[in-house]
Image 1 (cartoon, rainbow, N blue to C red):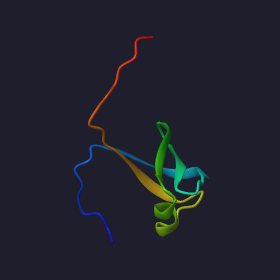
Image 2 (image 1 turned 180 degrees about the vertical axis):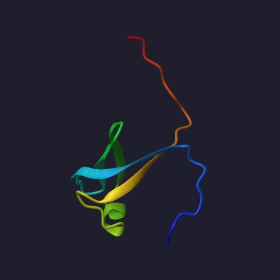
Image 3 (image 1 turned 90 degrees about the vertical axis):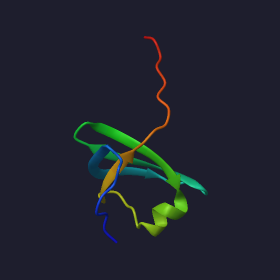
Length: 71
């Protein structure tokens, strides 16, 4: 399967730096030229996608809410 087009504007190409596996969900750290992007996805998806450290991926970021905190 290949993606022909997608409407997500925030796409970050990188390599998986670390995977913290849990029973149900896992944290996947993706190292990009702009820094680390962390995704929390099901462990089943990690297994189905055969994700491992060093795998090249694209992190797709889409949010319906953006919060602001005053510094």
